[in-house]
Image (cartoon, rainbow, N blue to C red; front, side, top):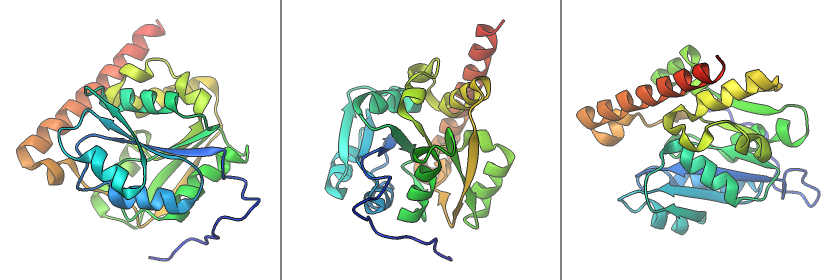
Length: 229
């Protein structure tokens, strides 16, 4: 993979201190260490893993990897984990990363943060490129479901229904961006992909999780449509 240009933190680094990385995680002990390490090596600021009521060692593994951890006592879904995490941060900009990414590098994290931190965009959305064909193809078909984003923390917390959106969180954020007229830019993430749910949970359980995800996404779409009638 061709690497992106990356310069280690400079004393006048414009990203340092204004950005935090938020990683919602549910039973991701086997996958999240590379994501945490890439986020820490990006040197943009705080790295927070929100353990969304996991029954495995997600929180312990995240701490050992060097992240700050917020443990939720019960599962709130992805949207609830993001809402809780964003509320506990004090940065101006938040970079959202999924916990099951493969191939993430520090340069990718900084590339997501830079357009928003500089004021060039209201939201940056990562797009997989040259990674595993299945996850890359899925993002081309449904780019609104991409979980790799950067945006202002205040804007994120103002998204209607954020805490209750569960797997529909990306839909909720995208709808808010459209309705508010946010300037959004797509940021290529060369070599990045994800571990699929069927790989993590096994075929049957993974399929059940995927179907639940689609139901929650549809629920978010229906709720927002009703609110605007």
